Image (cartoon, rainbow, N blue to C red; front, top):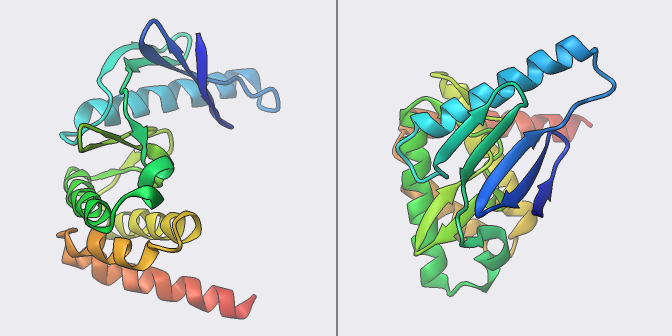
Length: 197
């Protein structure tokens, strides 16, 4: 067994060439409530992964009793580890793909909730989206705009040298104009809050 990631919500490990996502018990929560929350989040994440047509790890098993999801192991590179090392044309090609795939995700009314290069794997020149732990279903244009805004913030902080051209390429290939329009409003609210504080 190898630990791949330890987060606030879960422990992700590699076992027998499968990824096991184990939701961690929270001692500060009432036990019954904690169990309900973890079970609900486990079911929701498994449903999100199974509902989308974009590239994600295949769900192999859901253990609701023990709040675990068993998924296929994707042997590829985390995008955050290679993004800044890519040649400009390779990076822009990946950003094009990213814009198109987020479009498809939002078309299915799926909000990832944590779009960062840490939650994307590049395998055989294809992007795979991982960790839908903060994801949810929503038809709201606002939720889709916030999803894009969080990606922008993640790119700006982690990949600031190539941020501008990368983000422009993503938006160029993201096809929901009403979401882009709302994104401008979301960002102007953010700038207003920053000026006030």
